[in-house]
Image 1 (tube, helix red, strand yellow):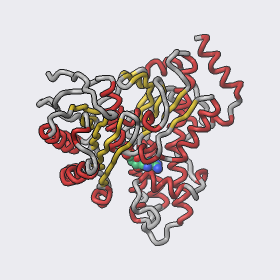
Image 2 (spheres, rainbow, N blue to C red; image 1 turned 45 degrees about the vertical axis):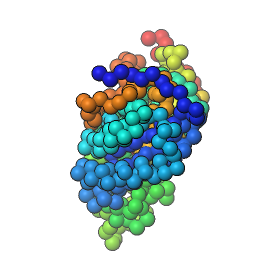
Image 3 (cartoon, rainbow, N blue to C red; image 1 turned 90 degrees about the vertical axis):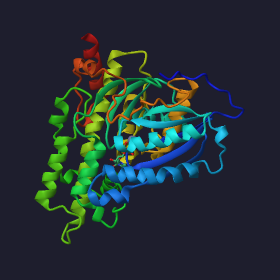
Image 4 (cartoon, rainbow, N blue to C red; image 1 turned 120 degrees about the horizontal axis):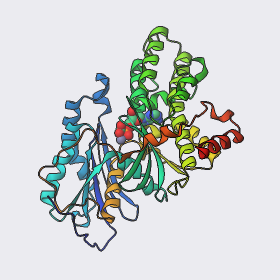
Length: 406
Ligand code: KG4
Ligand code: ZN
């Protein structure tokens, strides 16, 4: 067992190097305790995986192996190693073969620069805390983490204190976006061929009319009185529509407007599903009246860079007097800055800061974040109207009154 560290004092502000390799981005950054991003670098492997229609683990591994040295060299170009206090590295959750590359490289750096401490990082915790680098957001707050592999709605009380209100029961929204884009063959569409699935659909949806198609019925969404997510059924429906209407962007006779309309429909179905869960989470927190509910909501993770999602959630938050915080788009998707910042937050509180890396450290593909309180949400049995904008303030008050009576 490696002891936790006695915090060292530096003459300059605390600096941490962050290394991220949990999926297909090799990223690194140096951030300091005054919230300054001193340097950052990232090499994306998107174009190497794109022909295969998804992340290929062996390709990811090889690219991380090749990219780690140049990426870290780039961020350390003008920085002395002896001004860095620690290396923070993602060790879970993610693609194990990719995480291994980051861990092995960190081990080599720790052996070379022996003054450095090591801080293992939970990738989703890092997504949840990024906002504290870019905005003044004190704990506690509610967070929606929506990415390619996760969808979690939680209350964050401290760096390592998460209470999950709900999470996805099948696939993540980013995966639903990516697979829909793939089915539509958007990687062959000249306007969006270089974009990730979610961004490509968002781009086309800007000129689309969502109501031309309908995927999930309001009834379905309203039936499940919890904050858990499910995008699998929606994806099956999407596939059926694409096949039936021949909506393949590469085909010469595809109706471009139909493609845009269906993109708008996909985006709105995914976002509205998320919206009902966030809506219920707000009503739940209002109902139980915990002192930990400070009416603050944070959106993060790759899908949180979607501007339609931000707009819808912003409208909801305005309606309920909840303050909404979103990190800048470039920090919503995977990056080294969030890992370095998570390292700063942990170093300051001496939380899992180690003098060296344990010989037995292994990456974890799956790793739950905090504790599950979803049953408490179900027990409240809160109904949420699908088109909440149509409800009057009075109806909201009635829901709360009924809950308080229970
Ligand atoms: O957080 P992230 O970079 O990686 C994971 O940890 O998964 O999220 C990547 C996901 C991808 O599925 C991508 O399609 C989605 O975020 N994404 C978007 C947008 N930009 C990226 N989804 C919707 N709208 C976007 N603008
Ligand atoms: Zn991520």
